[in-house]
Length: 275
Image (cartoon, rainbow, N blue to C red):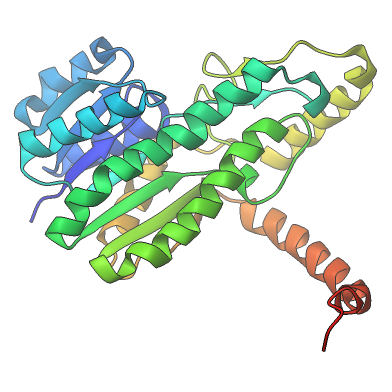
């Protein structure tokens, strides 16, 4: 049976690739974007399989209305893809209040509002799969993207709790954690804080380290088949990396954490007080 998808940020990047993957195999897609004209080519090609909708995910009321309209249009929702988001560059000291709030409003609260809007429909039908687009930065922290990491770590936290809350209703949750890909995430879609000269030398080192860590950027088209495998799995993972490399980065990070926690365990136990 074909699935019905609801995809935010479907105009470009992963959202567009996964919408195409679904449409190519005959699934139906409620595709959202701030500017629906960016979806005109998909509408021309796939016709009634795609239902384009304008959505600014930071508007909670609009998120609920748009999800409701998609459900009314197709009669059900099977896969919710919270892809809308952008990267905020800048050292923590450089981030302005508006930049911090805007990053959270889109990457965190946008996903929260769409998730909340979809859950009643998924509960009622006793099934559904929510895909939360996180990042390797949602697992490990890196310099110059601290605010972006904060938004993704928060997304990871509420999504892990969500998975435990909704499993009894037949609803599944997967956090997708990509490495670097050839999308416009670091380009036109991103925002950069006003530089502080105190970090100029460090920024050069960070940028060079990022280039070495990312190596050859992944091909977004290659993620189509991977995401379909996740969506079609009887027991999909709570978390999955996309790309070659993030597992090694996360392994090193977690081994360091475990080593530190173990080293300081006597102090931790002492702090408990009562026995």
